[in-house]
Image (cartoon, rainbow over all chains, first blue to last red; front, side):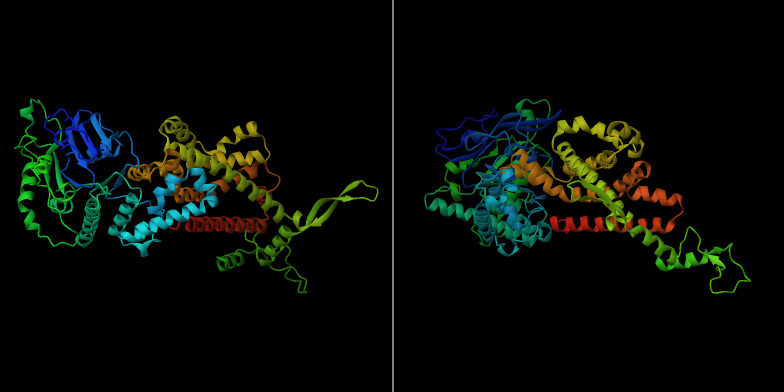
Length: 332
Length: 279
């Protein structure tokens, strides 16, 4: 969606949504989202917007409501207050606009890797009756879908594992297939919910490289003057990973100085950190030490349970974009 | 088992009242005869002969004058073995098919749709506590004593347990994340039920059906014991009352072998239909 003019902020006033520069192609807009479960307030006035082609990392301490926010974006648990819009359309239920890769339960166990990737287009192009009773009449469509799936499986380096079931593959292979399964639907936004959390270090690095490959394709598309194909939001506990694979880090935390906004009780977590992250090319060597300062800031602002900062003090992303500090798809 | 039985049968031979120690002729009665409860090989030969003996079947024979006369002819299709097998397995197959079809449909609906679960859970839990054999009187007055009685005994007997298994499988075995993911891939609610939940719970359904075969046979034999005029239950009751244990044991062997064969066949169905299961 081409944003004509500056978007209105949520009730917080200085939230990230309000600062989006004119002409930015916004894919996800989270505006004033609050969520409670009974008397427990989980999210409070969450505001941010993600532009097309970005890879944004969301970090936060345990219990900060990252999963709740993700569910609101996915549409399984729509926001009670505020709105989530995907490409200008309000999200009220899960749809093909938003893909998801979870840490666990990533694949359908009764399908092979190839069938898992083909599942989306197969569901999309046929109904239940056609897939079961009338299946012989849809042989050509199925063949075409399987070819498309096979090509995508090849892109994620798993062409040889096409006929393996999820239980026969490693965790890393399953995650690759899951990413291919989501990408084949060409979602406007891909959500990765701690996707590499259960993997060993080597596998994790491989998959981080894969995410950087997707970002490189976004940059190439930008270079050709085309729309970036992949917009990704990745939730992770690992700060190095957040900074390395993304071009932006968002911090969600319940530990902020809410008393200054006249709340009598903790109102819930909100975005307390939103800054650019360095952009890396796939295979580019990096030293985690170079993230040390940013990591320390995130830890201080987002992770520490002693609230020290007002919520907007470290929400600077769109200001940085306007100042030309951003790299990658929003860089100059 | 065979050797053990042979030794036991021999050890339990009883004195022959017709035995005459003075009679030394080749046709003299033996000193001991087999125990009636443990017939020997000769007894089994006799039992087999009677089980497979061709008996009368009625055939319609056209006459030169155009009329039709019913004639009795000896045929294998009139033997106990054939008539009892046809009767019992026909009833079992029909009753199981009805029970499984109903159990899968109701279980899936309960597992996938909360209002149906709320409506049926209590009645199903309640019915599951009533032994099907105790319902026999109800079936007598509602469906009569013909084949419908056997179908009702089997299908109502296995239904509550099967519904509970399928319902729990549909509800618990498919993580919510997979359902949400299917929605992001464009699945509608019928797609989710038919292409995700049913497929993922298929091995559970077949396993549950496999475990229902044993109870179904119990209900069927019990019903045949009481009201049938052919079938395994009928023959076991009749021959049991006559102490004709050679036939009883033969029928038990056939029942065991058939039950085992069904078990193996259903395991094979799971292996072929759900190759991902158990890997």
